[in-house]
Length: 276
Image (cartoon, rainbow, N blue to C red):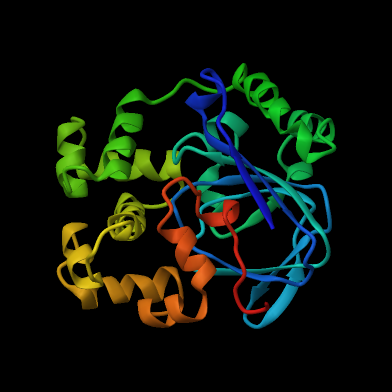
């Protein structure tokens, strides 16, 4: 498996956190994807993936936008993988692509159904080596993007960083918004409620806290804002589908990716899960 992350240029970075390339010649590999609070644009240049829902595997679109996922997503490749992805900032996908991002939560929508411009731009990228062309695609779409909600963008960044461990209510108050205003504007821009997004970011920060540190789950959980280890385990079950000990013992590659800050979770760092 080959994974490579590419940083956007300064102009595109207003909308995009990272581009990535994934190539794998091992078909039928199963991946467990966990929420990270960011939408993804997936350009599948090889065989399409299949997703599992209620025990049934169904084929995903060849190229698609996936909104926020709120729980674990199981995927498997149906052949050789040649994939390029765009990881958006939490609040930018809907504005850049002019889509109601909240309606795409836990959904994958073909680019054909989003816009003709996006479909045309995607068709111009034929190999993973053309990932550098994504800057041009993003900037072309940005010309028609609506104006950024600066207050909301700052508040999203505050929740995302979690440096002060402020509550959502405190962040709304600092932004000069009522709780109801903040909830409405956050859902419109990000696609999920601010408290759910905040929980996702706290969940992700635990793995960064464990990276290179001689500490246990309980200490890491408390340092990241959890009341106790049991509180963390509840989030593990919701977002990853398994408690920490089981996940780490059965899916060691995934666990290593969790604690590598340079990797992007969600679609951009799938690693082997059930089928090896």
